Amino acid sequence: MQQACRWAVRQAALWHQPLSSGGRRCLSVSSALRSEQLFVHRDSELNNAKVKFEFTPENLKRAEAITSIYPEGHRSAAVIPLLDLAQRQHGWLPLTAMHYVADYLGMPRMRVYEVATFYTMFMRQPVGRYHVQVCTT
Image 1 (cartoon, rainbow, N blue to C red):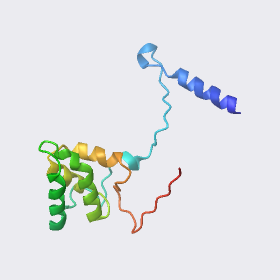
Image 2: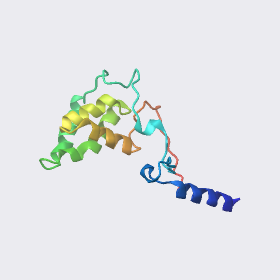
Image 3: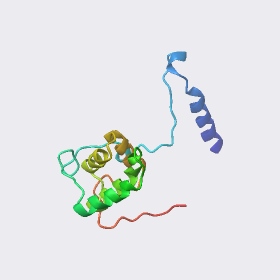
Image 4: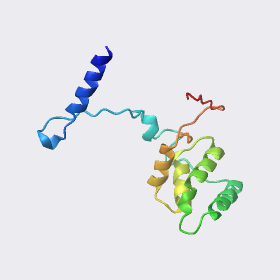
């Protein structure tokens, strides 16, 4: 059984040829997760561009303190701490919070979205009161 599986994987890997080398379709084998929750934003009632988000006055002072640590011209390095601050304020990280952080740092919104989708610590959908994670290592 294991040999049959190995043979099938080898054949699939050998079948992968570029389209230009014969016009055949390619088979791509990947172990990447195919969950839309990880990468794709879908507007919802709670998470769309019309929902307002701003730092509270207290968190605005914290954001200023965080960005003051970074040298001039490198404020974009504060994106992770500011996203974390926004998530702590709101309980999760809505799209408008990402836009607010991008505008606050003067960087493209897409760069902030890339960071928020890359790190699993950012919850881009509402979560419950308690968030439990299990280590599988």
